[in-house]
Length: 312
Image 1 (spheres, helix red, strand yellow):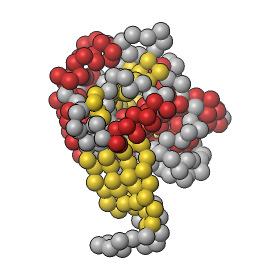
Image 2 (tube, helix red, strand yellow):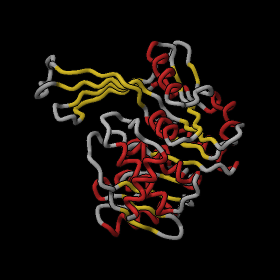
Image 3 (cartoon, rainbow, N blue to C red):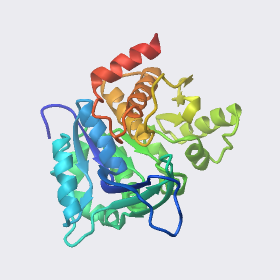
Image 4 (cartoon, helix red, strand yellow):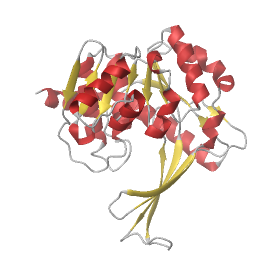
């Protein structure tokens, strides 16, 4: 399908609408502040990071036919993301995420209107299978319908295509029941790992046991994000705990998406377990140093430089 390896991301692309008050948030009233529109969505953000890392990336998502769709499409193209295989749903409302923060920037309440992603059914994605089977890797996320995830994982596992997955939230981990053995790499946080493994991860023994249980499903690699406590990396040969890399935190929103992109990028480069984890931590450190969800300074060179500092 291409002269060089490419990655397919199957997931959501949102228009994000963020409100932040100028002072203390007053419920049930109109608050002075700022409102910002930006392009988001887990799948789109990961694809954007991959493009910045120099990867040929193709995003399979669903757009409506509204003004938000036009803006999102233009943004993807400007970011170097191939959207030629995305769905357009006639009359559909493009996925939108509306959230209100407090004065400190912490989210207080949100509404997500992502019903259009239910249109990403097996029947509508069937003609994308050849594209995915030709990919060096495919990344999926749990905003997709459960039936679509099951179909995709089964088809790609049969074809031998490595599948990477971001569980996104504990609420959506149930969509991955019975599918972990089809995955090459899974990147849950501590609570998502607990929900998927059924093991209490509140202490070190439980965390290690949870990783073992996940790998027992025939999952290839697991990277458990531990927030300030770093990253647990495990495969069928070893387990290693890595600390966070030094950084100046401005906005943590895009850290997970950047790490997921770097894990795919590190696979394309043939990195081992520890190197892949270090790449993920390097990308997340770069991500949090920007006010934007995707740091425009993300690059393969920047990640390699940050990895060198971590290794040293």
